[in-house]
Length: 119
Image 1 (cartoon, rainbow, N blue to C red):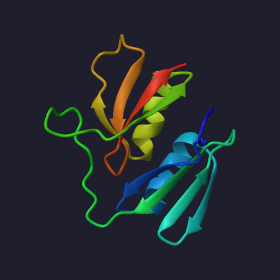
Image 2 (cartoon, helix red, strand yellow; image 1 turned 45 degrees about the horizontal axis):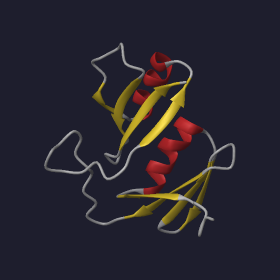
Image 3 (tube, one colour; image 1 turned 60 degrees about the horizontal axis):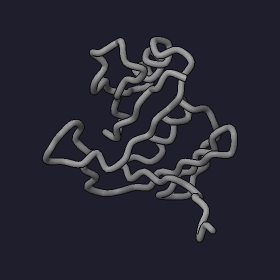
Image 4 (cartoon, rainbow, N blue to C red; image 1 turned 120 degrees about the vertical axis):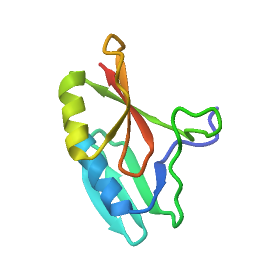
């Protein structure tokens, strides 16, 4: 028996509005302001939130000395099309050299790693 249900994943970042807009561009959805907290209602009922974190230090990937803290796996129909889209929105490639794999790794504008995964 579960003790709780997952409500929302919250990302610390220096600019919550900018990061919410980035993920809205990637995932779709509606952005709602809550002062230093921004909600993104993603189609299908999922929710991401973004909170201001002064002094935010982005994770380093890959790094044996630093932790990636967490990452999002985002399922896509076409890796090449999705890659062009996230790069246009401000993502940074972290590991896209091996085109035979079914995933590619990027950082969002605040430095959080995420993967585009072939659906």
